Figure 1 (cartoon, rainbow, N blue to C red):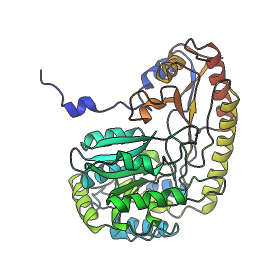
Figure 2 (figure 1 turned 90 degrees about the horizontal axis):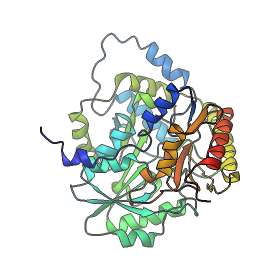
Figure 3 (figure 1 turned 45 degrees about the horizontal axis):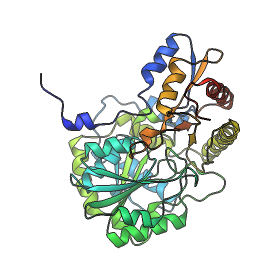
Length: 399
């Protein structure tokens, strides 16, 4: 029998999805599960998005341009300009979700064996994308005590080797919810310029910044325009995760020409997703104001509830809709599985994402979980009660 590739064997399982079989089994036993493990918002997708698809009148679902529909790219450029991100349609490639944007960016910028520095914890699939592209992730640890602020630039300097080709960030951050300051990004810019590195920035949560704090894009950083690649997605912005529409954006013409060849190889992005996304660009500001207000209420409730539980610590995030909490448990992977296999409180339990999968350093995050506060307040209240009761009786409790 032939063996699978070494690359396939090295691909990590998703920490967000690997517990699904246990959740399915629990549901069959009649247990209600509060899903805080995945960033699937319960906010309704804008009606304009859905109506555009329903009323498209398409008779043939054709391929689009490999870079995406020109009408969508032009309107998307105008959307970015509202954030002082000055790009035109030729500097945008529409992708099959933000995931493909990241994959294409890595294949465009890096050779096998090149190194990319990423502050950890980071979005778990960065590990998978880098494995697929034969790129080596060099993690730099951020601290839960600092709320996962950007590690000191001196730590980046120590990690740079002749194989270092780029740095990647997520802002606002998944899984931490941390929002980088202008000063942090300017320090990163100086480092990128000094070593002539690529800077990849995943900014899919730009609409979700709280407490009056400023969103600063890498596209705002002067002097490194040809080093920067912005990665985006409509999944969270419009609560349209299944539409699979993302974008790769750069002022660097060489990058864009090369990335387009990868885009041509996969033919085109989804037709209906582009139609909906283009229409959704007309979504009024009131929609995002309402969504932000809802997320702030959810965040405030969850963070307060977590920090009231004995032995739990969770910093308050300023963006996205995630937080990382440190729990008084021997092993978060075991705890999250135990929640689904062996625990229920009034026939209810909670599903969390073990944070170890958001780190690249072995053993890091072993007592941490990522929580996505994407459910309504009433559900979040029940979920926090379940978590508190579970920690009272978990056999592997450490405090």
